[in-house]
Length: 199
Length: 85
Image 1 (cartoon, chains in turn yellow, orange):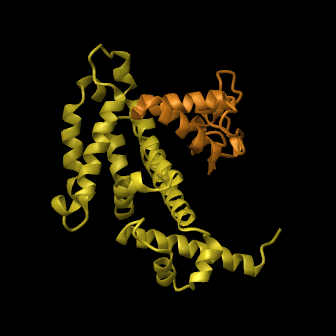
Image 2 (cartoon, rainbow over the protein chains, first blue to last red):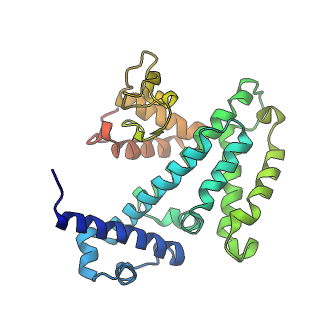
Image 3 (cartoon, rainbow over the protein chains, first blue to last red):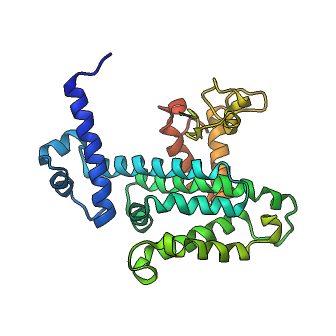
């Protein structure tokens, strides 16, 4: 059934508000932003906001879900053709870099977000951990007792990247952490991996 | 682009699809060896195992997250907790 111009206008407004919220969240933080801030930035009335998002929690869940899916999809697209651990982790960094200010907010605020939005963070990680663990399978075949488990190696990588992102004022005051540090962190992390994982 | 109805993974190349068959709506990870789609309990168990093995989550946290995540997908809409017990 063909959409009426009124329905199309409504969808257009919602898309605009999602994008506006993404930009405001990236700049000011997620939990710190009020519905009225988004309405003002998007040039709509407070009442219009509530037509599309009944509560602040609903707004946060929808914005985070929409953009987390974009980040996960982009990361998956970049990583799926990679065979080596190095190429996969570089793809991961590229995926983050495209959304860096918003991703940084997600990392900082994730434990404080509504459950549905918090789950999105794990969804993004899953897009990377799927490819990372597959690439490490070669190592798993020859794994010996005492080797570091794949999950610990993965979390060491995530922890490293997130630490630099959260503290961007210390590592890259211009805000471009991945651009400035990504390759350095990657090359040094690879040195910690067992040689069998890199062959 | 299609995404798997059972786990949400984007399917962009033939090898992403169950049995390499691009007419299928579910992915290679959601198929049983004979090509049929895994059941809800199998998928909950598989997702839980994936989260533990690749990201080191706590067993109970991973199980709850698997249930919440799957509930958003077309194949499992309306599945309440307990359906897989």
